[in-house]
Image 1: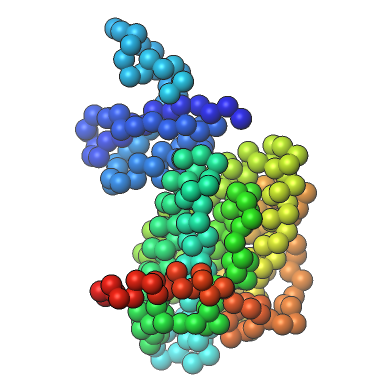
Image 2 (image 1 turned 120 degrees about the vertical axis):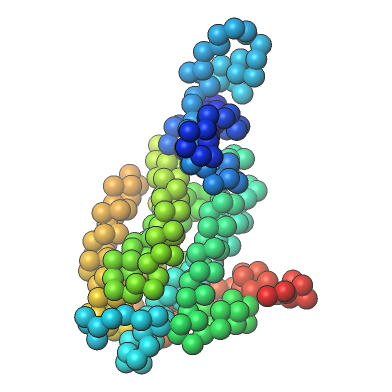
Length: 72
Length: 265
């Protein structure tokens, strides 16, 4: 099964901006949700979200850290 | 007893009832400790780095839950340090299926779904009962278990998508299913005594909940939760499990024997 790259964003407190804290590979969204929590659980996060990297659209440059378009 | 205020350790209650609740809590603690060891064996060797990290996280959760339950047994006159570090394998109340390692990742996934799942139902049964001294601790455990269940479901569905995966899941699940159901809902005198006092759910109710939880996934591999077939002839009521015991090397790890010289508690 093909693995999808998901980027992980989190904030420690309500009102703080979401911060990119890492990424992971998983075959689907549900498994990615669990992997995000088990991989990045070192903080007591108020909120954590995942986004498929393929859904992040580059705006001002094409060689940034999110340029992989899902390839990692 | 039913309707009385429930105090830590059921102090003042009949000895048989205190003993029954102690057996239930110690059985859950020992099962979580052994399940943690089994998960920890897959930190390396899981199908992906993320899966290994998840196994590591679940191992830590299970060990933490076990520690909370051992600590709760202080109210029953136990010394938690003795419980964690000084018992022989024959004194463990962990469920029979955890006496063996999983053969492959499908076996780990079957354990996540079945053993971890019915453990959670057993904990929920206590949470819904009258033993309030554990309420806060069990709420925390159940919240952490939601991630275990999500991972189990996702992996079970994934493996059940191939013929080989289904065969491996089925083989592993057949080995552990009945032992897990008996562990969580034995329906023996000790268990039913607790259920009659509203301290947990009866075996019939628990089996029904376990079927609701597991059957949608077990149906993918041609299995289902069987209706209770009664206790096996060699059931050990004192330990709430069948005959046998976890292997010595697992208990040596659970007790931390090799690090005893560094023991600081």
